Length: 93
Image (cartoon, rainbow, N blue to C red; front, side, top):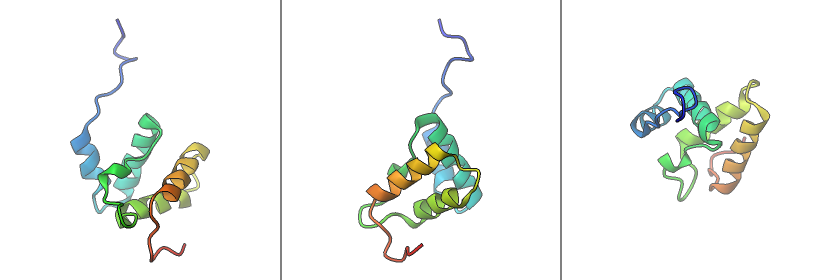
């Protein structure tokens, strides 16, 4: 039987969605980091990215890229996400 320490923490979708879509950039960045550390991907499915990448998602990815403490694996994950989603017409960064 697995001990309490080896059990994965319970995934809270409502919490994730609430924070990931909030207007607070720092809170969004923190939940994206937490999600990436747990699942090795970003929760892009929370956003409508059909025609272009959602502005909130795009801003959060840019914040992660600009942060010097963002690790190599996470930077690679950001780049992969940005490369597979439609670009923003107004994103000339």
